[in-house]
Length: 199
Image (cartoon, rainbow, N blue to C red):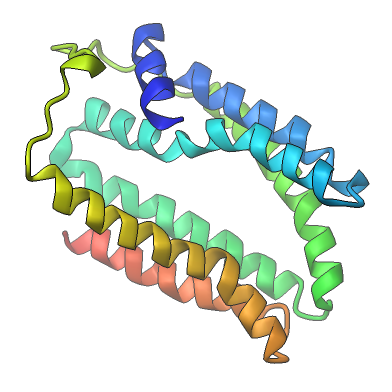
């Protein structure tokens, strides 16, 4: 979903519209989750929200570069990692006395509330300056250097899947408390913020 939706955001002239729509859809589909009793409703909720949520970070990254320049990107972007780490670790602390099922149930409602707050925050994003040069997607010619870029990104996202999904399941199966994955993610995000800050 990233190439067509980011290109559409460029044509609209303001990525805020895509960001707001993605979070509103996340709220609406998130409201389906408390009623889910099987695969179908859970899958529908995730699949309907995934295309919009998948473009949020690329759109925000591009917005930072357009509005503040490439030199300031790392110093601004690190706060996204800090915020994510604080929220995940904060939830882990809040859920420290809950079992895995109770923490999972609570996380659904936290997700809905945060998505709604995020939708409201997107309304405050100022309009970025116009693009100096617009390149059509059909003219994109990556060359051979694009192959290692794709491989590196594949490894990156494989590691993220392990951290965001399988780590919590593994730690649960090892008998660890529900708060442990949140602290682990917080430590990982602190390292990511440090990398952004020193890049």
